[in-house]
Length: 304
Figure 1 (tube, one colour):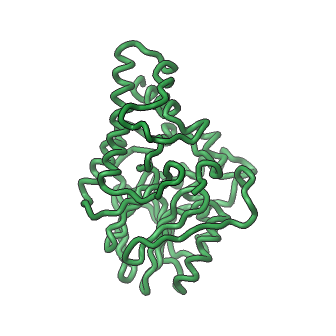
Figure 2: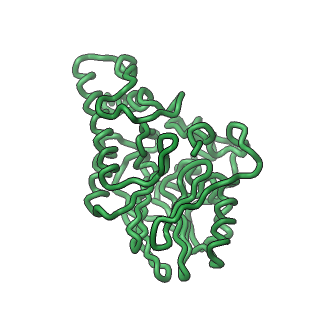
Figure 3: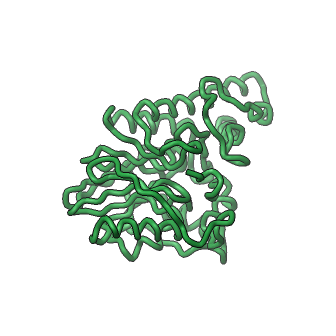
């Protein structure tokens, strides 16, 4: 998977975040998008191309999609789903508002009965699209929103979504394919990759730790977790222990920053750390999704 070289880099700056909503192809993107489908269990699987991981469920009674990537890859995903099911899409569920997760909403919308998200997502999405100005891609917003919990059955598939508080953004949802016991974390989890966080959208590194603890407490060791992004070459599939390791990574960054601030270290001094002890294998997406850039945002949060 070449995500780290090809996708838009979503950052906490609204101006930069808006770039993921623009109609201009990313970094020399080819005209025809390609992607891969991988099935996990009980008709649930994931699609990888450019952007965030798309989750899907295909059964004789239901067709559900989680996140939509970009317009070109969304079309590729739709074509692949059409080869697996003749059904209309019952629901598209957005994990949060970033353009690499919802940029394909407008492609999916005509084929879907509903788009679901946390109640903060449409407003955050509109703000990012407005920041992109005349170059913004066509947008499609959730028509079904929730504050804390949403749950609905589509034939033999039951979907639920929970908002446990601020984390990667202020509007993250954990989406569960209940029968398959597959949870899509969006960007609340990263597989061996340094975290990205969006403070202007209400994110909080401190709360993020709690969000992951609440999430894992409600699930079990058999749960398969899907995450939006990974270190190059890794799968977006994580286990309970992997998710808890990522929680420990967030905790380690918070503790490192707290100790440094107590010693009077500056943001620049703290952000100069290149390798976090015990998490040496975590990868970066230079120039703006590195350990240092995450530390800078944590410094700002803990100094506020």
